[in-house]
Image (cartoon, rainbow, N blue to C red; front, side, top):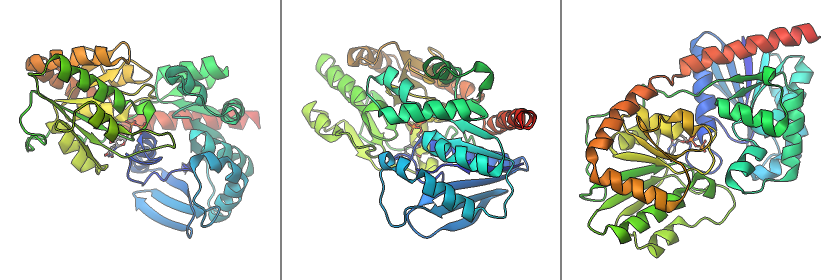
Length: 398
Ligand code: UDP
């Protein structure tokens, strides 16, 4: 099967953890490589403001950077204006390739994919990753109205929809009135060759401590790193004898003012919290393996790849019981899901874990076991099943 894998606003090959690059990039790259390893041909397609460029990046996998809106540094919010130009540029660069399917990721690529799939007379499969309505419902942060309207049209018109979790599927049914028969669920995977337990102990980065937590990901309000810091601030006031440290990896994303460094000063956590630039997966895996706990304080999360990756390193996860994290974490066995994203609730759990290291050790074993169910090969096979179904439905509708 030859697949056009559309990721217009962010390249799947970009280092995640900053700007617009996060779990979706990791998802698309790993899924494409897994499909390639199964003998299929995958063409990942993204926008560049520079010269167009195509190269083979793996067995059966190509990366095409297509010049659209040359030399313009456009923000994600400005990209809806270039959808028509994107259709033209992509169809020109892909001339000569006969695709069997278009798989578009996120609504911006979805809108481009609708036109390309029409042009090529092939089915369009869409993975939303996040949707405006679900984000609003979980976080209370408003999304632009035109995005919701476009998402409605996209979900109504595409052939099939692949959700990351059953929760995402139910959200699309509820908020967008999507027919459940059109929905497939494919849980993401983890690259276990990269994320695995590691015996090479790193030095405690902030000196001796009772508990060391790690956060990794884009720094924006929705990802909730402020919640972790607030919880540590309260812990310091209520249990000053405990030394609880945290390392945060990633950089700012999105346009909202989100100043975590000032918060650290305000909370008097300067000696127990450190910020680091995003790391390559291999280095991140070592950091995860050496942490006591990986914190995923997101207020809304479609799946939460960091949670799965941390567990694959044998490290339990502390997270909120929101969105797909309920699938990524086995509450009480591979980590802990907090009922409310409240700093006091987080503080109580963090103190309990700092005082009871055996709870952390035991959940570490549960974490590794739980992560075994997340593989990219399984995700690729299930994705193929969705492609096949969309082809036969598309064939009979022509
Ligand atoms: N990540 C990384 N280096 C970093 C921080 C994060 O490679 O320093 C990766 C991380 O391994 C994960 C992705 O970025 O695969 C974040 O995905 P997640 O689903 O947790 O969050 P999202 O970015 O999709 O909101």
